[in-house]
Image (cartoon, rainbow, N blue to C red):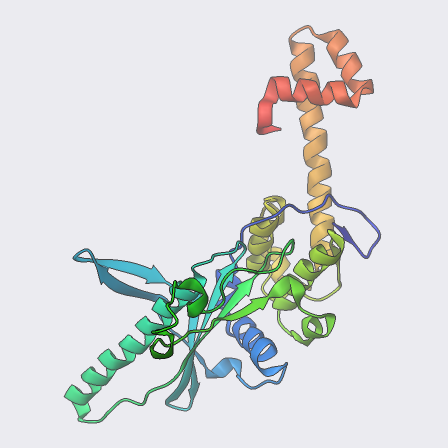
Length: 304
């Protein structure tokens, strides 16, 4: 990757995702919902969101099994729940995703029935029903999601009974395939995330922007997982929360840490070679990069 300050960085590898912490912030969560569902209109306000336990359970084989969403929040207007929104993150393609979501949403509706029963016992009134909306965020950038998006597509469904089976369609959003206009609609740290994936799809490279990061630690944790490069998390320090930080500045720290680590590794190699009377190897290693790398692997393995 590179940044617009003109310095180049090594290309980021395919990654797994852990946006869970970042998306749990109301400003990020509301931003994702507003851009993807409401074309950037500030329809859902962050102060209208309320935490919901992402976990639920189902019974099978006589035992209770836990299942958990990535992030889920109630949308309230005053004391009234308008909807339950859920987010699911996917870096890989899951052909059974519609079935999984169907179970999550079903569990959420089942929970409303249980709440209704409790309210009736306490107040004699019926609890209001509200819809459940789940968004799947797919972060793959090397190929489109081409597996089932509906329940019907998951099933071996005879035509004779098809009219009597209810379909279920998942709300899938391919983050890497968002338009530039959509990326610019984001106002939270998710703009940086979306921009990264879009750039990687288009260019296999990342040019950092000067957008200010609000949730620095959470974003760096996310970047470390996405890129499989722990330097993103290792460069974090609490002082970064007390000053204005951009990805350009973060990448400066990452680069400097990489340079320092490289220098320390070479010094360790020279110390080892000289301590073991391998003077000729030390001389050759200073001039021949391939030979130096061979010695690093031989002596330190994958630890360097």
